[in-house]
Image: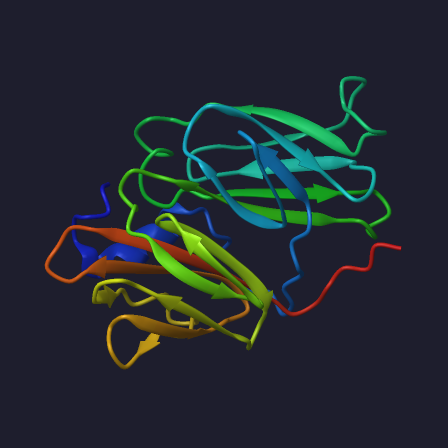
Length: 225
C-alpha cells in the first residue's frame, strides 16, 4: 500500500504494517545495540537505505539468542562458530521484499537476549523508502539534524522534540496512546515523546510529498556493568 493513498488512515496503516507488539508494557528500555550497514552506523535506533545490504549487529555482551522482525519476516538465531567477537556480533544479509519492505513503514526490530537476563539489548531500524522523501529539520535529544524524509528519535519519555518543515504540512493522527504533534503555523511541530514507539506522518499541503518520524521514548536505561 502506497503512502499517498488514504492519508487520513496513514498512521493506522503504518502501525499495522510495522509489526509493533500489541502487548502493553509498564517500562520501556533504551535501545543500545550497535547497528551498521551500507556505510552508516548508529546505536539503538537509526535509518538505513531500503536496499539489499549486509547489516552488522553488535551487542554489549555475549548473545544467547537474537531475533529479527519486520512486517514481512520473523526469525531467531543462536550463536555458532561463524559469529564474531566472542559471540557479540552477528552479520545479517538483508534482501528486502519488493511488495512490502520497500514501501511504507516496515521497520526492523532487533532483540538480543543472554542467558543471565542481565544483558538483553534492543534496536529499531527504519528504511528510507521512495514514498517518504520530504526533508525536515529534526531537533532530537539535544541534537539538530536534517532528515531526508524518514527519521527516528530516541529520548527519555516525556521530553519534547521539534520538527521544522520548509513548506506548510498536515500532520496525521498517531495511535491513541501517542501524543499529537502540536503546531501554530503548520511549519514547526512540537512532540512530547510518549513511552514506547510512535509513528508520525506528515504531508505537504496541496502536494503529494510525505515524510515520517518514529519516536522511541524510554523509561529506563539498561545497566551494562
